[in-house]
Image: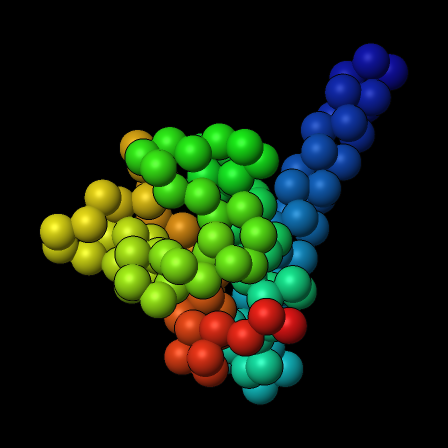
Length: 126
């Protein structure tokens, strides 16, 4: 009886892992069978860019933190770093710029693409 219970539990675990793996694969495929694309159309400061900055930059450059004298908190402060190209060059790890986030891996390429698209659209305060 105990062997059947253990086998049943093992089977449930295997099926759960397999189901999660399949679900993750499906999340990576769009309705046309290709990989999910990064949508960078109509990027907005408040909706798209700000959350990326809050999650990845504000611990050092926002909420009163000014590491390296850089403040990304608020649109006006961010616009300074956009205008002088520091933001895009830091997050893309361009030569001659301190790679950001400092000491951490580069931001996901989709996040970088969203910020870049927003900048290329004139970095509006929207």
